[in-house]
Length: 171
Ligand SMILES: CC(C)(COP(=O)(O)OP(=O)(O)OC[C@H]1O[C@@H](n2cnc3c(N)ncnc32)[C@H](O)[C@@H]1OP(=O)(O)O)[C@@H](O)C(=O)NCCC(=O)NCCS
Image 1 (cartoon, rainbow, N blue to C red):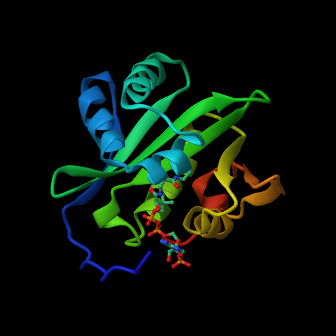
Image 2 (tube, rainbow, N blue to C red):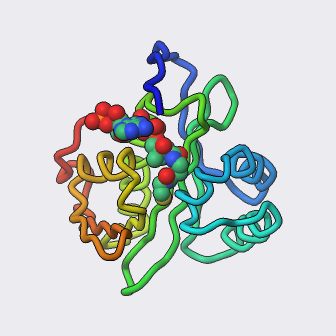
């Protein structure tokens, strides 16, 4: 993929938590992903219908939440956090609209994921990505995820610091 021109950082960029009232906004974001991006995001080829069902399911699950980066009022990046195993673990998954990639949006989402998971008293974050997903792996490495690779699949684990002040990450 060609590297896009960096957009000037606009003051009207915000991160917001999303609820069942935002189901359609979440769905439309996922439906804008092309087949390859969907594969990277969900780990398999998923139909639009299955995405719709998954969004409804995730919005009703305990310990599961979505938040997004809004640019001029439009959702351009989405993060989902869900309970995983072992207990105390939250799985994180991100996606960014094609026109907004490589602007640091995934980085911003990951930082918020860490803060949110910390608030929800999760003890560790889990990330599951394809080994070929350079952008996601680069971002995960910056947050200190310990990455293990098995058969083309990379799994990252990050112990969540007790407070944001323990976290050595810069913005
Ligand atoms: C992976 C994804 C979320 C990254 O989003 P993004 O907002 O473009 O990421 P960022 O701008 O925060 O960049 C993260 C790092 O990856 C790098 N990067 C971005 N696009 C890249 C690309 N195509 N190839 C290699 N590196 C890339 C950035 O330069 C940055 O590294 P740096 O901090 O060393 O400069 C986005 O590409 C995406 O939505 N992909 C499809 C879904 C997916 O793969 N989800 C992850 C599985 S859960």
